Length: 419
Image (cartoon, rainbow, N blue to C red):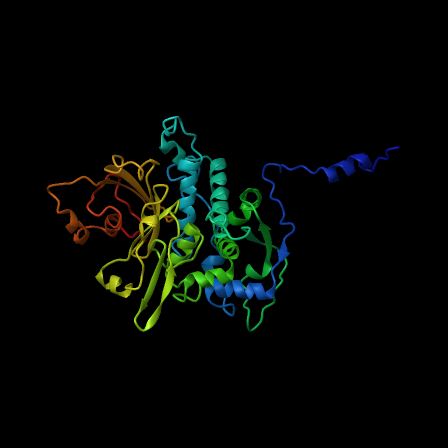
């Protein structure tokens, strides 16, 4: 006999709904954070010290008030993240490169001749649904790479860790720990395969996008926790004692963590041994494999170059990535440069004359033409010293030294742009 409840629902039906819950959420539903392990005081202190250098002072306020959001869908620059100029920009530039990578290349169906059936520009105006997918896929790829899941050979099982905030506070304010409103409330979730990370990120992506929220900090914490605090410290090799520098737009170490899975300050290829007759040669671990997304750096004028004498210049594994997308650091300003032809870096003819897009999360976008063919009217090697060249042009010359660069789009007008 099946008894009915006061609402007219049988106990059997109720029992079935408990056993077989709906896997798909209703449109607009935001699932509550369930499960995971609450953060301990020891880990909270270690995480803050590794990331920001101290736990007794709060991090810069932008880290707890910078969400991960994209521009209006189906419009010009719909592929772009939107964020003001602050210390999160290096992190968001790394994520932006992976968003573009998925939209332009990973998600595009290819024909037999390795070309897309639709023009690439159509993929740069994604719908809201495609924006959402690009975000959770890009975040998942970055986190999984930091866990070691995309850098063979592996020693042991990769383990990704994502931390989400809750309403509970697990670490109290003290002389050794200053509450920031986020770190002391985290729940930690562990994953051993990429698919589970993707499912989780898709489900809880809204927490990374909340207006005035801490999405950028949550992604940074996931990268650090997945790499491991001890490993991040080893990566820094004493060049820095913590990951996030005091630079206005963040540090290159955050970029290398997102691009290579290691927070290395060394941008050269492989391992270089440094020493002299009075000291043992010590290894400096640079970029150990070809990066899917590249990095180009221009430090600035001569005075800045002297101040950055110890800074590294990217090797070929960063300058020539698998896809024609580069995070750029131009006189301390971070952006992303990309080309829509996946064959650009594989075909000599394609690299003779081509366009590149340059975008920053502040909304600056320019289009430039790069011509690497010989020009009789231009002293190629001298162009690097051309005082009329903009910093962005000089940055492009670090990759294509003798190129003639022409601005083909409208002149940009962005106050914090390096160009």
